[in-house]
Image (tube, rainbow, N blue to C red; front, side):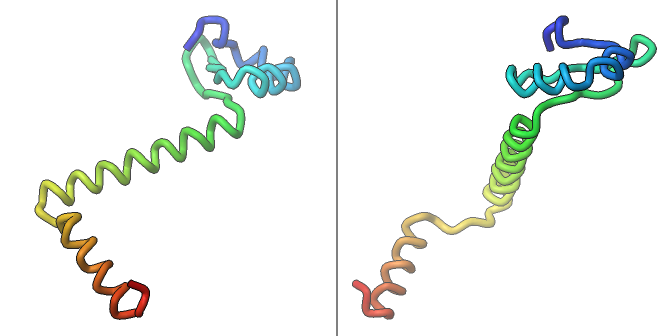
Length: 93
């Protein structure tokens, strides 16, 4: 995080509206310190949502990798064969 984006809690208290505007415009988070120690990170809602979606995708990838390592998967060719058969059974193909 950029040093310019590290502020003490007293700055947050006295400049809340300015901080909201700055963070919303820049998309950069701000680290808030208390007694010289990092305490919280303030970020805009869109950046937070994007981060949550990224973490969810990473979790899905991790779970998928574990399934593959454990042998819990079906080859793609088998899946496509099954889908084609379902289409035939439904009169689509």
